[in-house]
Length: 60
Length: 141
Image (tube, rainbow over all chains, first blue to last red; front, top):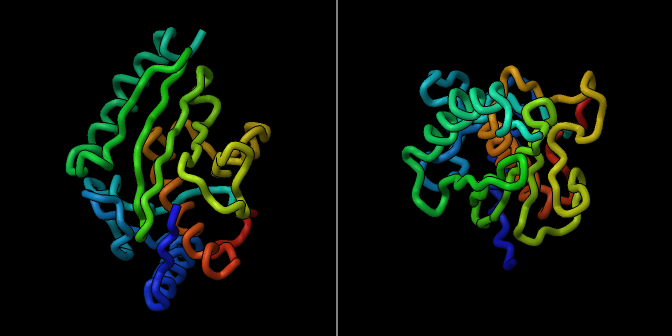
């Protein structure tokens, strides 16, 4: 695939979001239409939780 | 005998998994919806994710022993070899093959859609790793 990299600012934003998610459980928000990363939120209503990754107990 | 052939398995499918997929698909553009097909004693979920600028095709397999055994998610789009990527481009999400006590999959809390969102987060990490060479999250403890 022709990989299109993140711009510097985008990359910083993603790294900050991932670390907030890993360290403090900040929710990562997914666009409900096309699954793009659209930011973070401290709290997510239950009815929107499917579009947010609050805590993924993954092996990394 | 797969989970689709047992009464508890059928109940789980109808009461938990199908509603979760329907909620996920509700506002989704057609190209990003999950499609489900039967495969042996289990199911295969096919879908696409685009966490940043790149589109990835994936499949998540619910094996016949699901939900005791966690789902397996594979990225079909070719990737560069990276950390936390197993044979066949299976993403390492739940310590596959580990003993149940050490496994991070919790069948009482998670659905197949949780595996999809976990893969989405994995892909976000991959996009960062692709440029920096560093996985942005620490190893699981």
